[in-house]
Length: 95
Image 1 (tube, one colour):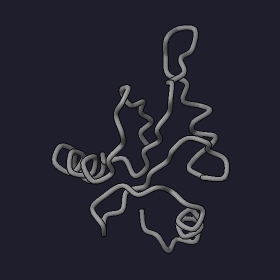
Image 2: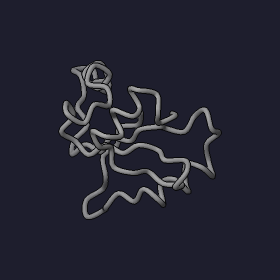
Image 3: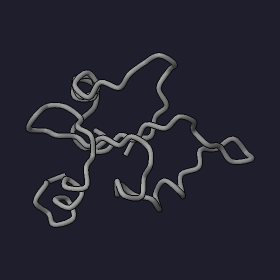
């Protein structure tokens, strides 16, 4: 999963992000999930807070931020829904 913060007045484009990731990263390094946050939280020593993000995982019922999943068939990142989450948990949607 990649957690990013967008610049002001910018919108997330799943199609453009897929093209960029596909062109610049090998398959094993491509983020399967992209989480959009309004602010990236830091520790007192200016490190990113990752533990909370890992604990929350990718369950859309838990996460209040925008969350996208890589859809290799459609060549884009699509919004994560509860139905997709259930498919992933039941191994019907391959990561």
